[in-house]
Length: 126
Image 1 (cartoon, rainbow, N blue to C red):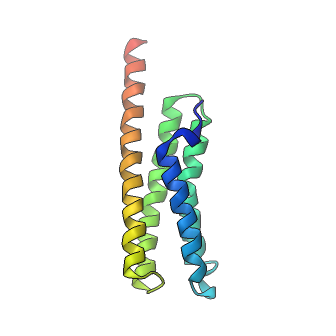
Image 2 (cartoon, rainbow, N blue to C red):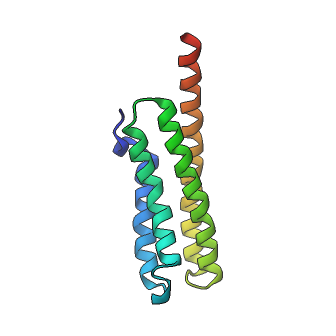
Image 3 (tube, rainbow, N blue to C red):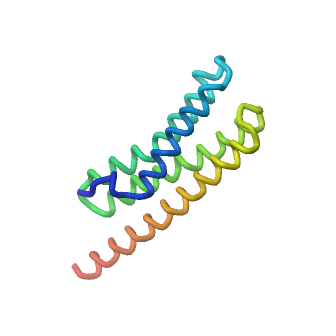
């Protein structure tokens, strides 16, 4: 079992979630149960899945939750684009949020690869 708070990618994903919550406060009220909710849920899913994966027993299980977090990140990327195109986000806000998300996605990909490598090494030694 790992401590999720020790993961830099978790910290960055948590900070992005806080930014998304703050940024969506200004969205139109009619989007409260639409895009606002979708963005908040998909963003919060990234650090939440990392936390859940850290509570599992194996690298394989952790890797599965990292993959789920990556799926949530891909969904969030689309939500950012939609919010920009609907003019709920300014171009500057979009660039900042998308850049932060891209960094998190690269880190998740790297973590996934490390976990796969560790899992292969364990299988070879068995």
